[in-house]
Amino acid sequence: MRPVRLPDTHLPQTREATWMCRQCAAPWPCETAASYLTPGQCGCGSPTWWETRGPRRWHPGPRCHTAAEAVAARAAEASKGRPPHYPPSHYYPDKPRRVRRQQPSYRHTPAGPGDIRPGTWTWVRPGGLHPGWGDIHHLAMITRPGLPKCEVWLWLDGTVHDVPAGHLLIEGLRGRP
Image 1 (cartoon, helix red, strand yellow):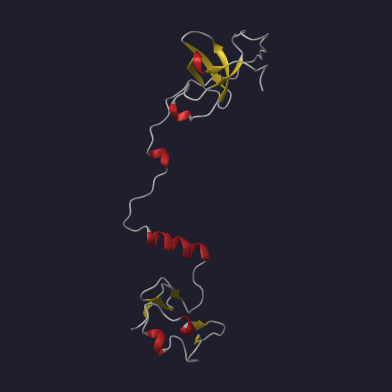
Image 2 (cartoon, one colour):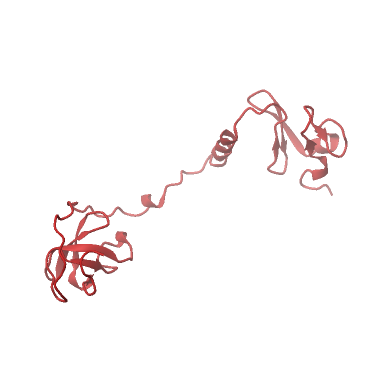
């Protein structure tokens, strides 16, 4: 039974201008190698050889493409007939638009526990913001206290949100961390 791929012993030696078979010492492709190869022609006019049942290709002539061009050509060939790949942002709904405000010009340090006024720094627990903001704590400044929701200004990007008062962590903060 004939092997599926070209035996490595019949690969070309490419040191000289004329490629020679490693085992036969004949010009490559030798008779054994030719039975595993499909001849072709490059756009530059050089003959090419493709392995009939494998991924290997040989271009015996002068190099006509840079390595980057060869990778781009292979990628284009591999993606023929497939729909384009979109990043995950195309599959999920957009975050709701938020009012963007300037950072308040004042810094407030609370006098003690229970002193909640505009300018008090706090942490917003996961679940207090839209799910698109993730399940992490966010640093925020209270701009309008109230019940059942407080308006906070996010330090991360300067957007304003209405957050349920139960999702704010006030204890342990003294000024901006």
